[in-house]
Length: 101
Image (cartoon, rainbow, N blue to C red; front, side, top):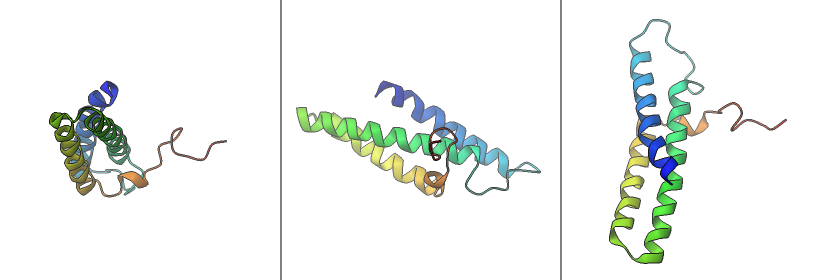
């Protein structure tokens, strides 16, 4: 979980920065799905899912309201990320998502 905790802000920042800078550059990536920012957003979403599941497990085991609060915040962040990067989960990350050979 701590690995995901560090990945979420770093990868989300990379996704937002990459998308925003590509919008202002000539010759920006023309591919609407297979691009760096969607790949970074996909890693963010995967990390959010794992972290949310872990916090929900902790909440179920302990009844700690802070754990469920953390899970709810992550759920909201997931929705916001999907709103900003609706095609992220369709991005195929080479070596991670492609067909195994």
